[in-house]
Amino acid sequence: MGLSVTILGSNSALPTSERNPTAQVLNASGRFFLIDCGEGTQLQLRRNRVHFGRIHHIFISHLHGDHVFGLPGLISSLGLLGRTADLHIYALADLEILLKPWLEYFCRNLPFQVVFHGVNPGLQQVIYEDDLLEVNTIPLEHRIPAMGFLFREKIKERKIDKVKCDFYRIPLKWLPKLKRGEDYLGEDGVLIPNNMLTLPPTPSKSYAFCTDTRFSENVITAVQNVDVLYHESTFLSDNEELAGKTFHSTARQAAEVAHRARVGKLLLGHFSSRYKNLDPFVEEARQVFENAWIAEEGCTFEI
Image (cartoon, rainbow, N blue to C red):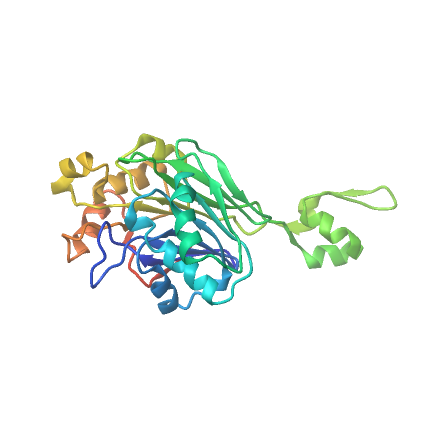
């Protein structure tokens, strides 16, 4: 099934009548991961028909309000909906200190556990792993500690070549081993190489989420060759000085990261509320990196 990402919010700092603060949902073969949780996220989840109960892991990039103010309300609603499964939150450890008094006051009898995973934003490390997916942090350069997230599918199993397996009369019990890449050793001692019996696996996909950050050489290194990169582009280049002062990026700088990292596709987001028309962001980015797109709210991008 692969990866896809649905944009729930693409604005910076303030919600507007057209755009919400940052939030996204990554669908990894039917497993849903919430990335940031700005104000209004639960309404956007409903509008985009994402079932609340299928979200078990939430990743918070940093502790600015436009990336986290939607979290208390979402947790409260999950309790009212009767959720019982644990909810895992990956963020700077301070988030647990901030949220626990709120949860104790407003959500004293939650029917599920909120499990906090304190993460050091300054380190590049694996913070989540299952049988299909691995999530790494990406240190970012912002006014406060901030991190991006790299979602990468694990190497998939090889595909059985049914015609070849039938021809060589391969026993069914050997098929799982062939999928794992083992050669076939028959009872007669004849060895048949794996590549004669299988086909290459479906390529594994990757998605990198990088907001908020100023232009960073470290980010370029961390996101090399990812299939899709979401990179903040709060300003256009005529406000590059302001972008630097506020530790944000321009559309051109985001495109430079995508170009130098040789990514497949660039999604632009985290737009300043001063911009009503977002077309200039794409125009500016495509001067450097052609496959650049606006991360429009409500859009789902296949990876």
